[in-house]
Image (cartoon, rainbow, N blue to C red; front, side, top):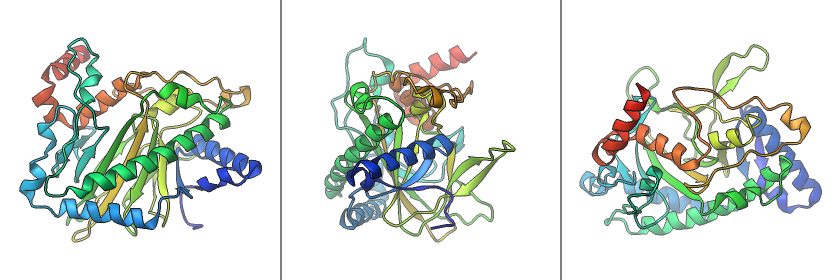
Length: 346
C-alpha cells in the first residue's frame, strides 16, 4: 500500500471509541483539505453485494443493443437511462464509455412555475430484459446512503459544525448512480474515458472493478504550484471517495474539489465502475460553514472559473452539469434552456 498516491481511511474507526473516532475525523479533514480524494475501507459493504453489483453490471452491458437502446436517455427528459458509447461529453469532448444513469424514483414535476432544475426529477428507465438490476441497485443505494450520512456527520464535527449540520440542510438527498463500462481502445495514445472534471455536488463514493486502473487524480505541488496526474488504482474492499464543488463552496475553499479523469483501457480489456453521488435536495442551499479561526485562516477561497461557475443552490449546479454532459438530451427536451443559456453567455 505504500506506493498509493491517495490516503486510506477506515470508516469503522468511528465505532471504535472516542479516540479512534477523533483520529478518523482528523484524517478525513486533512485528506480533503490537502487532496480532496481518499480511499475508504470499513464501509460494511460485503464481497457478496459487490459481486452481485458487478455481475448485474456485466449482464446489463452484455444485453443486445436493442434492449439497451430501448431505455436510451434521449427518451428521458430527466437524463435517466442508457447512454451509448460517445453519447456523453466532458468539457465539450466525447467520453469513450457507455453507462446507465439511475436517480431517485420520483414522479415528474409538472408545475410550469417550478424552477428549471426540477426537470431533473422523474422516473428511471429500467431494462425489461434484466429485472434483477433494480433490486441490486436499490440495495446498493440504501447501503451507500448510510455510509454517506456517516461521513458527512464526521466532516461536520471535524469542521467545528454541529454533527447534524448536513442532515439539517440536505432535505431529501439527491442521489445518482452511474453504472459505467469503459471499452478498450486500440489507439497508441491514451484516450478520454471521461475527461478532466470536478464533481458538481458534495460527495462521491466510487466502486471500481478489481484490478482495473485508469482513474487519475490531479495533484498540485505545494512548493511549485505545478499540477500533475497521479494514478488511483482500485484497492480491494475500498471505495475511492472525493468531494465536489458544493463542499468546496460551503467551506470557502478549505476543503477542495479536485480534477480527475479516466484513461480508457487498452483493447481488448475493458473496465466497470459505479460512482454513487450523494447531494442535497435540488432546492437546498448549503450555507457557509463557520469554520474555527485556525481552519478559516487556511481557506483558499472558492475556485473561480468563468466557464464553470459554482452555484450555492444544488439544483443549479446539477442542471448545469447535465445540460453540458448530454447535449443530445438537452436539445431534444430542453431546447428553451439551451437557448436561454446561449443568449446569456453572449
